[in-house]
Length: 155
Image 1 (cartoon, rainbow, N blue to C red):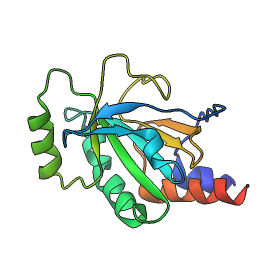
Image 2 (image 1 turned 30 degrees about the vertical axis):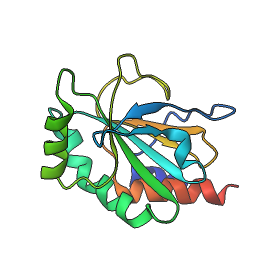
Image 3 (image 1 turned 30 degrees about the horizontal axis):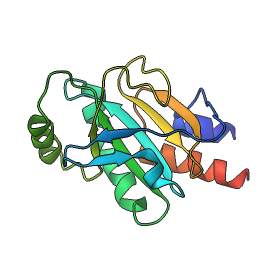
């Protein structure tokens, strides 16, 4: 377990909510996306902004994780926190950085999963819809996978 914490430096400050959480946000694709649409899978919800260097730096890790898991057991949802930026501009940024996971546009005071005290902030939502972990700062694909494996083995 200690090795897991050292490898990850990942998702701490776990918060488990009974009954699951949900939200609906508009995606840059023009469609509404609900967190509950992904029940049965792990969901990595990553809050980011284009002006945030660590956010941009961790994107390849999130893309890698999403590509390995999207058809099986987990997905990534990116929630863009850029204020007063057009969806088309965010779409161009996402295309430039080859982001393959859904990118959603935040709404004011969007705190359905918990407080956002800085960027990037990542929440991990279990297949039954509970927030089981959160991390302020960068995450890695390996760290997320290790955390999920640890959680799955504890059941």
